[in-house]
Image (cartoon, rainbow, N blue to C red; front, top):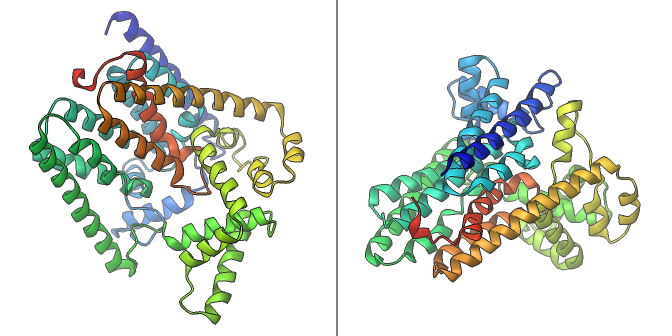
Length: 420
């Protein structure tokens, strides 16, 4: 990498750091950097400080442990957010060396990444950990390194990500496609894949077992079928016009389920979800599509506004009008020009990243790396559609980073085997 490229990368990183520090110090006094989930995270961090592993909380135990460390060492939550700015700089420098100069600029200037990169929450840490492990896996595969210790440790790493955010739990099986499809060391890659998935299964079972021992619940975190069911059915209720408020609709969904269970004790959330979807397929389809679009191309207007106000900002609720098929025009008319500018800027940037990343996938197929392309496409699809009906752009932070990395194949027709 020449001197001019290094200068461009460092300039991009410096600008990204400046934006994130601006968001942090503007919101330091009003608490805007805390975010809506901070209370639950801090509750679980307090349990760590008391010497108890907080298996019973809504979130996995990893990010609360991160917060507990900074509270114990620095008596400050703010320092934990500052440390994320340092991690952003180090990660972006590392990624740009493996991708290209564009990776630094796109990572630095992405408003969603900048906003959620300093908000107290596990989304940013989970995304950079996942992308780091994904790239290291691609590099190991490209170099023909299929040592069992290497892939066992990578499996441990990939299982660290769901300790921060449960969305990552089911990604490792999708990686088997590119591990087992790696040419030419077929036997070595099969053994590496077997070790990779075995370690994942054993450690997942151990974690779930420990959580069950403390909470009597066999789920990986508090994001279980009850919570997912409340979100899905509650969103459908809003789309049906039963409520204007999602959380009130979620409570309505729980009450309706309890009423059904009085008549039929075995009636549970899976059947309730299925019945509602089959009753209102049009509403569900619109919600599903809206969720995917919000996840991949969504904006960060609300969290950015929170930095300045210290309060949760309600958006115009366009998804409500779209899901119902009525009232969308009225809601569009109530949006401020500044809000529209934020939507358009985010959409333009993410659309560029998305289509350039997809071109990178196509380049991989042309180079004969079909298993790597298929595995990566499935991972991106998983992050796009797994939120079902409650998609938010923060759920695709890691997907955006993977797409940025894939752009290296779009702009430099360079086969994975030439990675260094």
